[in-house]
Image 1 (cartoon, helix red, strand yellow):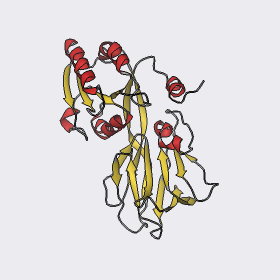
Image 2 (cartoon, helix red, strand yellow):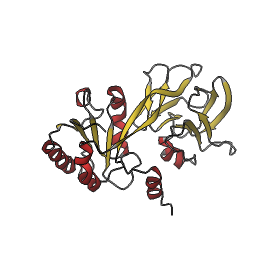
Image 3 (cartoon, helix red, strand yellow):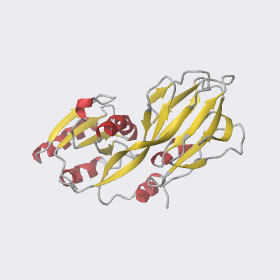
Image 4 (cartoon, helix red, strand yellow):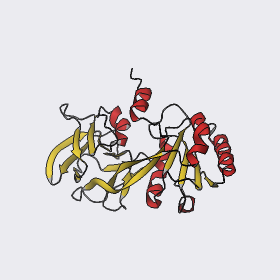
Length: 274
């Protein structure tokens, strides 16, 4: 792979040890002749990514997700380091990062391109999600009534706490907690999982990733809000007749992994499979 000559460290200072690890990695990078930038701002600034070879996110999956929109915009691959135990996206531990960082900079890595979802709401700019798009009511104490169509055909009307639309990458996140399916990250699908549906037979539905999904709502229940990867909130305008549209994005995000990275090894470890 191509050597990394410029890199930004996106550091979540709220995570114990993150700043110290960033300092150590920055020293290694500079000794290797790599130009470095450091930011602690979210959303990340344009100048911290535009024209750079890579972005090293130090924090966890949530920190990484916050960098995704700008990384997609500028086509910058992300290397994720977790400052904790759980991390499906931030796959490097601090020690693994220290051990492998210089070889990674010299091109000893592989790139995994992950599919993204796009969400369009009346009154908001389109947004992309790596993990999931979640539609819930603004009043969390009330159920929301949502009608879902796939390529113009009604799927069902749901009376529930909300709906999760998950990419394959995001299947191990909120989707899994809500009883949705585990999906291999290379699978070309979108999973829809209802949250605490009033009708107990409502279960997850898996769609081809070229499906255009439209969601309309009944104002008599509660007005919906849309969460993009858990950090960005969209509030669709209108009375529910203009749908929320969820579709595959034409763009992808690149995750930088070690050559020996194994998806199922991560799953076995994080989910305590035998």
